[in-house]
Amino acid sequence: MIEVSGLSKRFGAVVALDDVSFAAPDGRITGLLGPNGAGKSTCLRILYTVLKPDAGYAKINDVDVVEHPLWARRELGVLPHGAGLYPQLTTRENIAYFGRLHGIKEPALSARIDQLVARLELEEIADRRAKGFSQGQRTKVALARALVHRPKNLLLDEPTNGLDVMSTLSLRNWLSELKARGQCIVLSSHIMQEVAALCDDIVIVAHGRIVAQGTTEALRERFGNKSLEDIFVETVAGS
Image 1 (tube, rainbow, N blue to C red):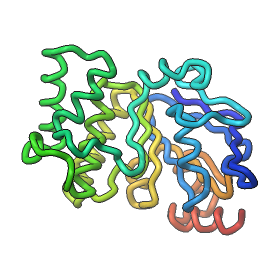
Image 2: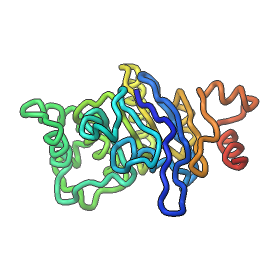
Image 3: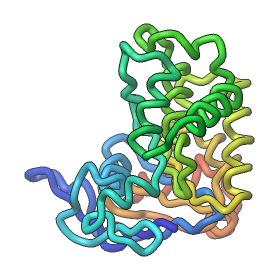
Image 4: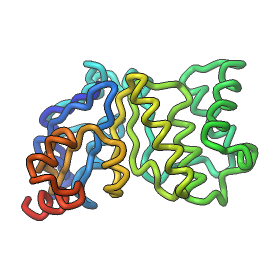
């Protein structure tokens, strides 16, 4: 479970987060939505310990991420925006590097990499250097890297960025399987169709504040059975 309470963060005069609170339970997918600059990425970066909040706290399975950042990193699988692969390493080497950082030893690491390569259909680029990969290829390798240590909690920032239709459908199916296994997934996306298809709970952020949150069904009922896209536009425009 991921819990955020009273998170606030400023960058000079800019208020990136202002008293943000929500919970992402196990066995559910929580969608973190908002326009560009709303504070979504800042919130995710606090969760995966790149930033520290000015106020409030974030917890992974009841452990504070600021007080115990190394523990939090072990419990998280993170797909950041932009992937951030090492261009001179191959697909397998990129995944293996993160596996070793998490303490996975051979031969278990090789077996795990083989599973991820097969599941994400990375066979054609498994032994190619990442330099020159397409956006979709980089995203899939970064996702494999995030999952190599089988984390219980996932933070996914635009996980279908650059993926083709078939790869997107495959990823959606996999995320649904992970949810069914009891994993906690927080997903940030601008694609409302994707959010509607995957997310059980929605948190909408604008100007650093939460402007709406609840289950997908509860939000639709509250807004007169409007589409998620219309709900998003209405709440953000009125903030």
